[in-house]
Length: 330
Image (tube, rainbow, N blue to C red; front, side, top):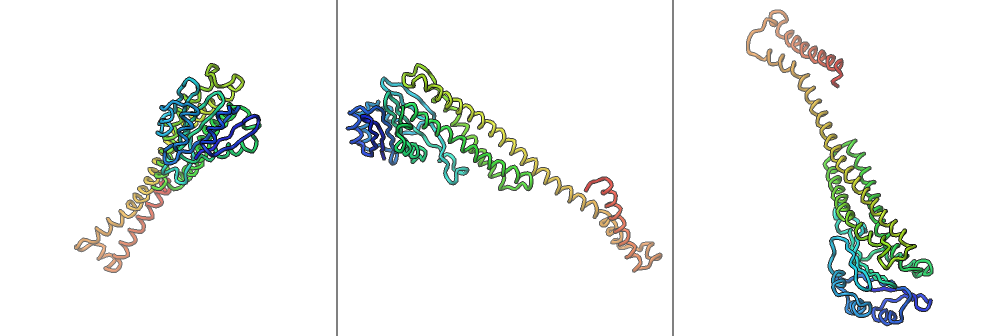
């Protein structure tokens, strides 16, 4: 699927046909943005012709669009640069299958054009494209403005994911402190997996964005460098935030283990108190359970000895309860 928006003689044009875009590009539009969503990780023939013949991109760059780049990259060519960055578009079950939420965005940037390619539908690009159609004088006023908006949305996707993680971690903290369960530990481990996956991809993104902060890159006008420095700063800040979350999630695991230990200690304490309280009962019952003639039989009689034994049991239990209470053991 391909779509393009561009200015020709001051007129904004949107197009969804690769051949027509190729023809219009020969008219030298003042600025053009082409977005291509690959179908089944493949470029259509007309799209390949557009990239290779109209824009004259190197075949290695075109091949890189077809195969995922596990790390961001920026490569300089004679008339353009090719790059790849990564963002996050959360799926419904992203805590269990977070890697499916990570997308790659490839881009070609030249003096008057931007071409973006991706393998799945990216909703923020749809939004930017519609805004460009509605307000072209604002959104399409410069190549730097389009590129900044794309980068800004890509980096902001990490911030949105961190907000989701913060909500999840706050919920887990409350549950762990109140009543630690096995389900909580599973959720903590899923969250840990998400945070560490974010850290893995986010740390390397700075290498791509820093290129656009240089004054000698030949593409970005000097007055726009501050915008791309802001993108780079935002990326650095996101990395620091992710590192903090990774430390927090490790602390949360420790809190869970401590809560489980405290809970287990309370159970053991309760069982120990019960066993200790019943110890006199076992001793007395064991004593009177022997098949011998006890002196108490001559003093209290057979029935009176039974009441005597029961009385000793209750008095012993009561004495131990009073002692434990004074010691504040329960």
